[in-house]
Image (tube, rainbow, N blue to C red; front, top):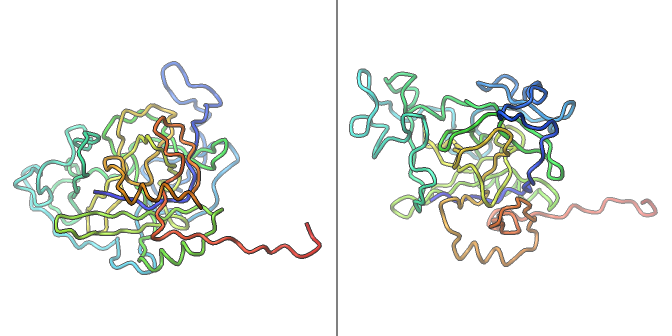
Length: 326
């Protein structure tokens, strides 16, 4: 089961295309010719709209980096590789596939949105594996395959949308940033105010023996385009921890339905796409103090963004106005 820490960013309403979509569904060329947010570090450039605008500067990385308090360097390779040199990687013979194939022949995540209660763990072949770079168990590590765009919304800051058609089950992008220890997470969150955006996400994975594996990622200062994804109570993306080289998971986002060009990309900050709210979640919903409203517009909208009080305790900024000045 995957759970999530509330990210203090507010969600966004659907924005109308300023140029209108062509009848064929093609994206207007005027929207394509924009600076590359990814600075050439992704397979494809990531454009920005509108012209002349852009998000606040941050250091771009397509992969996780070790931050303060991280127990494991996410760039280290600690998993052994498979020995599938002359045969394809298949369950039963490939050490990376413990139960069944992760992806189908179209590189789509299997059984996504099938109504299963828990998300199955995903392990891809890694740098030490003897299989081909074209192995079908190498998907997330190949990076972006669809043109994406960071765009300014009417009221809620920056968002992310696709310029291409994305089939259900396909990998879209990662949520990458600094991997932090819990003490550093608490320190950063305590410095926030109710007016600040929070990019920190906590992934809690419940394993068979009752153990909970926690991963904390913050792309606020060092991160990728995943930092622009906004919340929706009826999202079109699902976040799945995918492990490749080590136990530090890549936070991979897959399409839960066919997504048309121009559609905003979103996921549920709580991580409850396949997991129903528990009693603790419902209790938090009753305490709306410090909660930020949700404007996703979904029929099932919960009215407020997900909130995890165990780590997030924002402080009000002091009043620095001098006496006699407005």
